[in-house]
Image 1: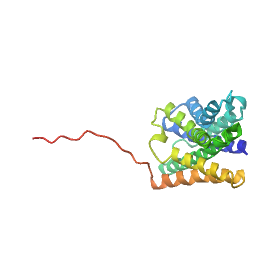
Image 2: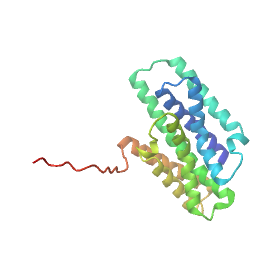
Image 3: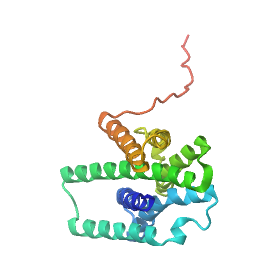
Image 4: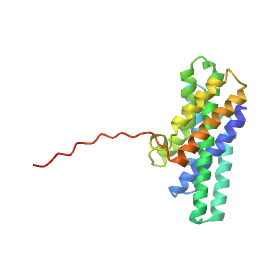
Length: 216
């Protein structure tokens, strides 16, 4: 089950990485690097934290292969479509948001599952932290490489959604079958991200500024 979820998340995140590369007008190598890093970066950080060496992307080439296939499909589509009408581009952006939300939910749950399988089920904090790191790690690396302020620090309740999904999964795991807990954890992330995007929810931002001095 973990493998299937990881493949779904890999495809979803690779697609979102391609969209960011497109917005930065990267060449085909840049698109491949950014798409692949987004897809496997979170899992690599997870494996390093859990002491799983070498990380999964090197032990099983299927993840990089799936990410590469997704990038090839994206490049084929981009070359075939060329310039898109503004309406169609907005639709493609919506598809990216959906893909990113699905990938975030899948990897948040998979990260928690992996931590439990490694024998850390007794430490909820570690299990949930690994889930969040797995979910946001690829996107964090993507944004840094694209010279952008990481999404998790600026908009649309990103890391918080991964946190909620991991918590739901861990709590339900002892009460319902594993696949049900996983589905509900992913659904939690997807719903929160979708609502945040549609209603433009953001976490509060507080900025300290110097008080203006009155003249005279």
